[in-house]
Length: 351
Image (tube, rainbow, N blue to C red):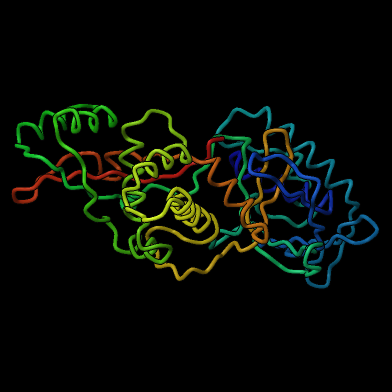
């Protein structure tokens, strides 16, 4: 059994092998005419190599065993699987017809085992550079509930000092407010404000510093703005923060600096960086992103077209937060004579 997101990885594999190529997408997820020819697809499975030949066949190799299946069969299986996924309502389910085909092609797992961000390895021919490269891609699906780009945890907490005189009675009164945004609003409405103090996790802090030294402050400002603003997408929240220029960039082009900083966080999170693990800048899915759209289109954001990938991530994500009690944030606490408050970072795709 598997959920829609996991089944979507298999759908993407079938569709790519059936077409023998993968189309690029723009920042609005539109399928472009430009495409990358796919020569091989590789998974960490029983059968590792699926080769697309010039006769529109897929050659499946496992050790000394070889099997040839027409590409059209993969397209037909992709169409059948998509129909199931578009109509399925359960959280986790089986699809017997697809599972029978999986057995035929030596595919033992619906979701390919992975220890990094890459869900599939593709050997593609880049028509721009004329290079042939094997690259790992992360697969995201719009067929089910929207997926996360950066997952919430206690490691993604930002710590703020409450500015303005506060007493324990005020602390208790605000902490009794059930809703997160109402609680943050009450802090400001009572004449107080939140000043970024530090990050709760030193590894995540170091990872952000690796990207840019001012990134922790920028994200901290965004989390406050997001907690005071209802329904703001990431690009809108950052735009509001950037207008205030809290980092004090001495240039008329300061808005672009804020956007660039956050885009670097997004692309790092998409292709390699995990908050609580030390990161050295290495991308574990260096090929880019593959998106399965609701209509079944499969589009690719190749890292070679970095600007398109950055724009896609920037305009199709939002700030949100994890569970307050689970991740230990959103409650005023006292240390000596000072009062503090934590906000939590999670980044999710809009659809």
